[in-house]
Length: 251
Image (cartoon, rainbow, N blue to C red; front, side, top):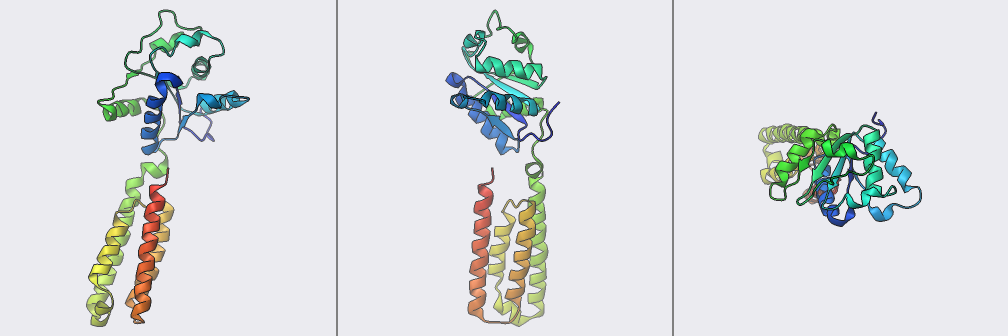
């Protein structure tokens, strides 16, 4: 049974020689789609790191193993890490997905404890049709994307809705007051509205950006010093740029 407190959904096992590049590509693609993916490095396997690996495997729904050419050759050794990871995943009944790379061939005699691996429903990787391959892989996963990523489009829709409503209120107020219309140009409001619309704002960001927008709106429609309003406009645009950069760095 999966540990509900696990930090990861998917464990990727691989042989560094011939398998690391493919493992990294799969990890990055799945992470971009909202999955929590664990990818270890063989040179970190020292001390009690093996216990950490076993804990991560036990906590994941899915176990993906990259089958590169010759990856099974060393699995006859009882202390081989690829062998130990595979056996631990099999014993814990993880959802098992072998990915066969080009030129990979099954051993006629499988290493002890790994015999069932040969009969798993695996996938053949394709460099030419990588996106199609990822779709097939996702269809075999038990894991689901994290909630923020899964509903990313919903947050964008909410951000657009906030921008639309506040823009309408502004335009209506401007229509009622010629002086207000002179104080805040449609070009300014349009520029900021578009900037908010195209940001992929997550849940907390929507609330924060909405509050700042409301404060900015009140400042702009209230009669006052035009120099101060100009500074406020630049400050708000800088904030949006900061939010955009921050969201681009979200992993």
